[in-house]
Image (cartoon, rainbow over all chains, first blue to last red; front, side, top):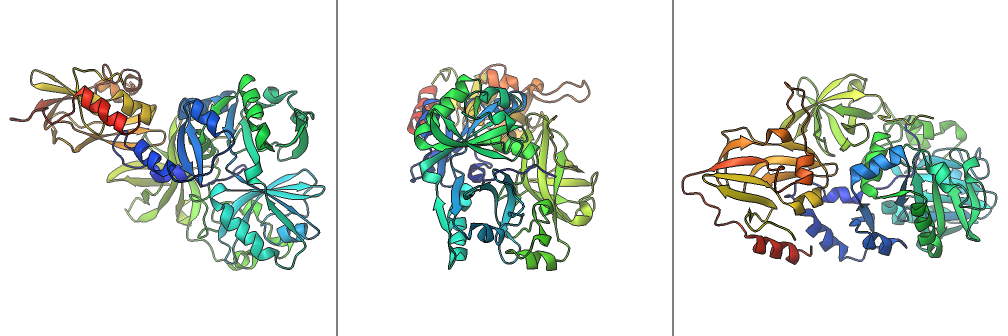
Length: 391
Length: 137
């Protein structure tokens, strides 16, 4: 099973492609002139020569020193990510539990206070609207939603809030979110907050104080490593960021975030997940509790026949990447499926990919061909995740 | 920009250097900075005919796949074998040469000019600098 985490659409993928060497930055700049949102750390990114890309409606750093170096820093020590583009929404009021239970595929009622849980929001047909994290507090809930899905999910919530006693507030614009990830994360944050966050269990969170100001720290992440995600007011964001850098965390962009989550086989909305994919196909059946009672999409998932395609991991022979959209063929040259994410992965030093293939081709060891613009690469179905940290 | 003045440049960020009848070709430092850390390179076989402005190879980094365009018309006379894996000798491709020294030891191919072919259509260092400046770099 892949570790749960926070997902996002990687908008900069749309700019990748067969451009001439160096032609991309011009495209980036054209898009940057549109009014994308900026995180409270935007100025810091610019001052530190980050390469900025539009991503889910935001201007975000894709890399500082380089994707491979940042990726390795997270696997071997600790990396720091500005993930303020992720949407943070609080859901309070007497009907909050029933409201979330009716939309979220995972169980909400069984969550303890301060627990964080990964799951999906599905439409009535069982298609995935988003993958989200739900935080349960003594006084209500908060959810973290993919940046690109923020308008859609806020509208979805509003539509289903009619007649209920709820207070739904989008907190995204007044807060920042910073992830520190890697084996050194625990020692790195020691003493930073009023509470000892090293005592947090995996997928738990705590409200605490940083410089006498309230913040939330969770033991969560999207890299396959141990680590924390911190939600703070905009005013405090730069102080937290600077202190984590002083303590030795390496700033990392969305490029490394994407290769890290690929190695850890975490699905990404817009790639492995979409409204045309249901959680079972995506290998996320563990986050769907069909026996918890009625919820949006449940009837469709119960009635669903066996899927036409399922998510698998592929190891590609050689160093060449099999990018998203590449066609997969089986030995007799019949169509087998399509790559949804693929990259050279710096830590495992391999070209890896996730793909949807026909279920009969999903067994580990199945050889497949990848068509990369006319060239054929040899691929083999391998178990997911590609990378699992030592505990 | 520190683009050597003894080289000529294509708008797609390849450089070319004429030595006798051979033209050495590579990618510019700017291209390498934009790509960051090449992970894979595909070069044409010796003897292959190339046309100016047409793709002759592929360079990949973690995030991108890009065509390499031939600055001149001619045939491949030599490849920088150090940039390519040698399975027989079990030697890995050393793409750090492209990353660290794109105008020198990171050269990619040497092209024998076709009869009548020249480098005259290529940009001078000053013109290439101006292109980069106009693109905001």
